[in-house]
Image 1 (cartoon, rainbow, N blue to C red):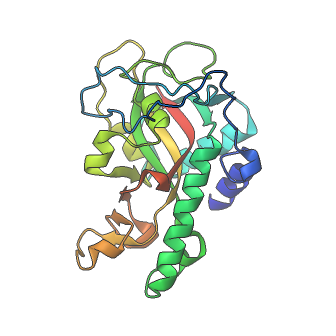
Image 2 (image 1 turned 30 degrees about the horizontal axis):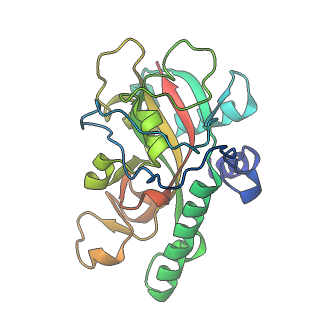
Length: 263
């Protein structure tokens, strides 16, 4: 599965190389004097707040993978095989979207990786893989979507619906006030997220969604071991990369790559 994921990120421009990342279109009007958005609401918080959009944001953020597309087949295989007990879950994959990341988002991700690697090198007792690549893991973030769950044939841009958690997460780079307070919670079990971890609010087009992410886990602290907590980059339920789920502190550690919308 790991080999399939590496090949996919190299060929599908998931921010694997700088040349693969889309640059935002140049704005005709000046953005000087405007403060960048700091955080957005998500999850259990007040979603009635109207989201603010940057004047110079990257407009095209999604690319839909049609049924039969080889890349979609790989994502579906990864998603299904990542479920601990696939026979337990009944939800079907409705659509798969590739996230188009800006150069700024990708650079923050890689800068964070280098910071983690440097810190791990200085603290040599850490897990060896952290020194090599920052302990990059493939993890899933459970949430909901309004626009991607509708019958619209194609979805390209972030919607302006304040209740669409997928768009608000992508828009803010996971820097929501909910995540700021509770940490960014990701899971290695796709099936668990698709069924139990996300509360669905009533709405015609609201669907469960799982964001497939490249994640710099760094040094992982077991929840049962609170000693030297300050030197770790994330908290998990198991040792190192075998954790069922991780809680990360820094939004730059997460690079969203694909969105799986469920029935």
